[in-house]
Image 1: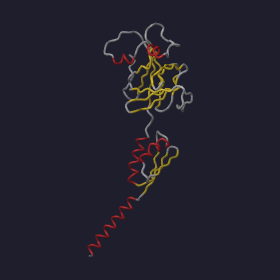
Image 2 (image 1 turned 180 degrees about the vertical axis):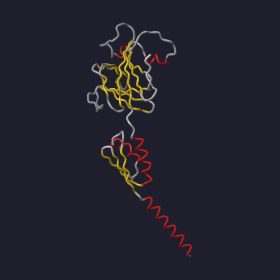
Image 3 (image 1 turned 120 degrees about the horizontal axis):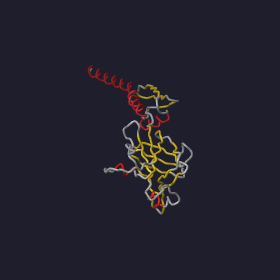
Length: 241
């Protein structure tokens, strides 16, 4: 009987310790280096349990919850607090179809050189190309969606977002730097870093009716408008031939 009572007391004692341990809460303070508290908290919230609370001020996060959960959250914060990726975006216009040229295995001896313009981008931050360029625009007519081309005479706003191995490039005519919604002209292109993509050519512009009022080539040769994006920190560089 005494042994039974002793075993029962040990079970109750160990259960009490476990409950006390599980109920132990701590406060974790993390100073962020690269991202704002709003960005990090937004990324954290889907992963937080009911027992964890989070708040922030300036570059400092304050988390409170069970010890065993805070350890995992600290690793997640470190993954979210990364610098924005930088890009180098190249715009090309000229007689060379760079998208076709980069996939060709034959030698080319043409002396033609395209006109190149470089724009530096930070992921998620709009930047402006201060020159005219053709951009594709999706149009919906009679339940059909097709691509037309719009000449942006005064330049165009550009924004880049990483999507796995690709980068989504968004064009907008909106003059408000931080508001891409409700643009008069808005389109997106998915790019593989280091690979040229031709957005339009004289033939496409003529076929779509977009290029009837404006021509930039001085003869009958095709004229191409292409883009290519690079990650400066990697070896995904755009060939310029």
